[in-house]
Length: 303
Ligand SMILES: [Zn+2]
Image 1 (spheres, protein in one colour):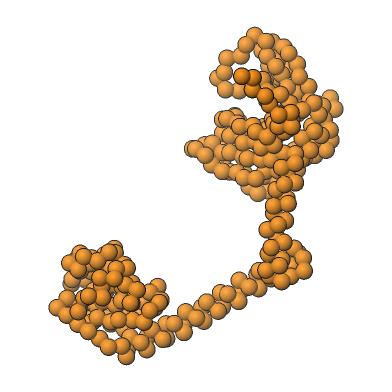
Image 2 (cartoon, protein in one colour):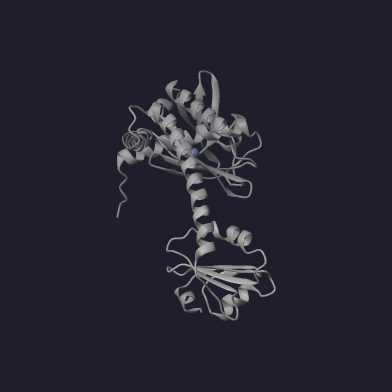
């Protein structure tokens, strides 16, 4: 069976491939000692792995993006030369990998007028002019292994597709936050975050006051292991509880607090291990010598 490649897909791959060469050229300028560690070229998508100790800053990533896009808009020719390996190296080709090259090699070069800005030995197919790449945008940078970084990028129509997807997200935010334009989003979000932080801290302080009152007034049980047993109302904020318990019962040997949902905290002064009490009552949860916490409906059977 003959494998047919859709011409549009093939062209999309060519755009991504030539863009990969441009990316490589620019990275070699930023990291003079870098080497390619691998690459993947798909339809208008590319992934390029290279040796570098540090991740690029956002400014550097933008600089790379701008540099490549300028070369795209400048409509530079991309040439293919069939030559010998030695000749290609003389012509400035980067020889990567510890690869063995055939006697005859394909040299792909990009020219800025008389100046060659990229020269690579490559078996892949390329566009004939950088303007055919149409546009380039970096979508991510990550560290993939020790000393190896990865840049993923888009070319051609996928760049517009990405812009449209991001626009849709922003449009939804404009609607949800009831502003008129993207430029007002930041201000509104900053305002909301400030209000949220203030409200949250107010709420926490009210909660703490309520809990403090509650701990004073709630009916207290006890048994051989626990000096105090409290049942607290549903959905009590357990985050605030450990500190409050410590403040209110500094001298207590052991106490158990739980909600009807089965959330519980065990506090001890260390003379009895909180963790061993969890084990003794076979509760689900974790603990240390002085605190144990978990969620287990069985806690309600402890009297
Ligand atoms: Zn290539």
